[in-house]
Every structure is written in structure tokens, then in C-alpha cells.
Length: 126
Ligand code: FES
Image (cartoon, rainbow, N blue to C red; front, side, top):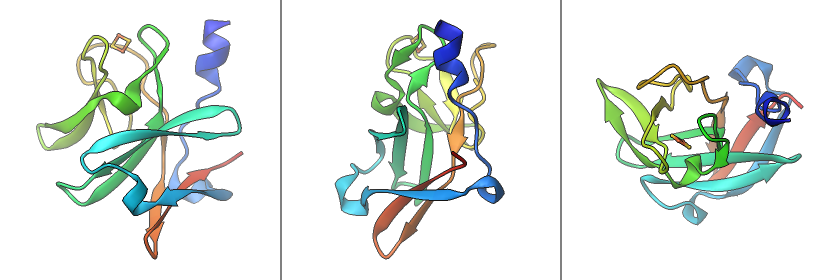
């Protein structure tokens, strides 16, 4: 059951996108923080990393205790890699590829983000 939930989340590479889901205007997202959006039953954390001028998206589900909390994590950088710290137990995950930087937890699924004319889209392959 728990693995069924986790297995819903598969990373999507830019070249695999078959649908760009509009998730809001850029101004709807807080700067240097995350927000949760939903797509087909998935909870996706979208990060407007204003300090480095980039956007990221990944599963909102933390694989540690299976909590939907990643969007509420603090973002920053470690060794030049943008990362999010889960707010529950502070495990760090790369925003670039979702890999866990602090222990051997499964990687977060990551999704491409694009901003066009101030509108934010997340790429999916389902
Ligand atoms: S629930 Fe995320 S680190 Fe424990």
C-alpha cells in the first residue's frame, strides 16, 4: 500500500513531457519557497527559487515517513546543488535530480517546469 503510493511518482525528463499543466501565475508562488499543486491525483511541490532565478518541481511526498510535506521544506544550496530539506526530519534532497543528499532514502521524482509569459507549467508524461 505504502509502496503503491510511492510508485505513483516517476521522474519526468524534459524530453518525455507529453502534457504541460498550467499551475498558476508566477506571482501566485512565494519566492524562495514551495507550494503544492495537484495533477491527476499526484501532489507536486513547485519551488520558485528566486535567489538563483530557477524553478523546480518534485513529488510532495517524502519517502522517509510518507508524509506530504516537501512543499513546506526550506530550500537552499549544498555544495552548489539546489536542495530542499524535508520539514519533518530535515533530510535533504537535490532539486536537480531528487536524490537524497543526507542518507539513502529513495530519490524524489522531479518534473520539468517552464514559465511562459508569467505563467507556470509543470511537465508530465501521463
Ligand atoms: S518525513 Fe521527511 S525526512 Fe522524515
